[in-house]
Amino acid sequence: MTFDPATYCPEHFLWSYRDGIATIRLDRPERKNPLTFASYAELRDTFRALVYVKDVKVVIFAPNEGNFSSGGDVHDIIGPLVRMNMTELMDFTRMTGDLVKAMRGCPQPIIAAVDGISAGAGAIIPMSADMRLGTPDAKTYFLFNRVGLAGCDMGACAILPRIIGQGRATELLMTGRGLGAEEGLNWGYFNMVVSKETLMEEANKLATQIAAGPTFANGMTKNQLNMEWDMSLDTAIEAEAQAQAICMQTKDFERAYNAFVNKEKPVFEGD
Image (cartoon, rainbow, N blue to C red):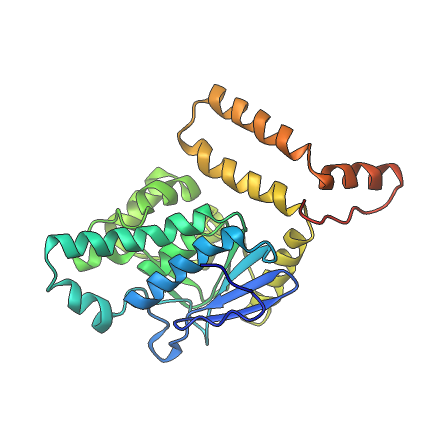
C-alpha cells in the first residue's frame, strides 16, 4: 500500500495533510470515537505505508469533538470477542498489537494531541506516539483490568514503564484508575498540558518545528530509540556510531555546516 498524502481518503478515520504534516482523527464523536476491527486494520496499514511516503514529515493523532478515543467499541468489538475461539482471539490481539508496531516502526514522529477520554486501546495509541500533548480535560484510562483482562495489552507493559516508571505503570495497569492531565504531566506522560482552545495550535507548532528539521536524521533517532530498548550500553553506543556516520553522509548535514559558516539558518530537505 502506497498513497499520495494530499489525496488519501481512508474509509474508517479522518485524514488531512498540509505542509508535510498529516493529521488523523477517529470519526465517531457521538460514541467518543471508539475503535472497530476495520479502523484498527486501516490505521495499521496506513502507518505501515508511511514508511514509503516521504512527503509526510510528522503525524498528529488528534481528538474529535472533545474526546480522543473510548477504545474498543463495546458492540462492534467486545461483543464479538466473547464469542470467538482461541485462534480467532489470537488473530485479533496480534492485529491490534500490529498497530503499535506500525506506529513505532514508521520513521515519522507521531504527536498525540489528547483531549477528553483516552481509554483502553484509545490510551494505547497516545502511549505509542513519540510525544503527547494534553488538555486539562484529558483523562487517560488503561482500563483492561476493569473488564477482567491483563494490563499487558498492545505493548503496555513494555512501553508505559519506560515513560512513567515501573511502579506508576504497575499501579495504572492493575487498578485501571484514571490518569489526570496534571498528574500525567508531572509523571512525564504528557510533554505539555495546554488549553482545549490551543491544543491543535500547539500540536501543529511542534509538528512544524520538527517537520522543518532534518527528517532523515529524525527518523534515525526514532529508530535508535526503538532499537536500544533491549541493547547493552556497548551495543547501543556502536549502533549510534553507525547511525550518526550514516547521517553524516546526508546533504542535510552539509547544508547545516554551510549555513553555520555563512551565519544562516539551515533549510533541511530530508536527504
